[in-house]
Length: 124
Image 1 (cartoon, rainbow, N blue to C red):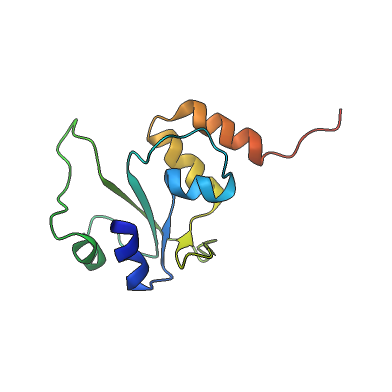
Image 2: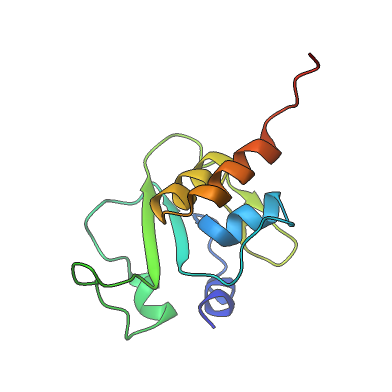
């Protein structure tokens, strides 16, 4: 539901990262389900709750300590976003952002598999 609402916003400064982004680069990644929605916003200000989150779901509130997150928001303040547009109308965060999201979500085996599948194979 959140992804379809995000798609309707048609924003090119917001990308999907984490599990969903990693699946774009490595479709066969060993992941079942989507534990949370990782979003990356280019050139946003940290600390503020962007208006687009209220449009995705007005019931979204900051998680309390120890409570699982439904949506995780990362802000990038670099000249280029390195987002790629996918065929489903959403932007996808770059591979490094997706990898960092997997680590942050404590999906270490999947992060290692993702890294191994993205790394060029050595010829020796």
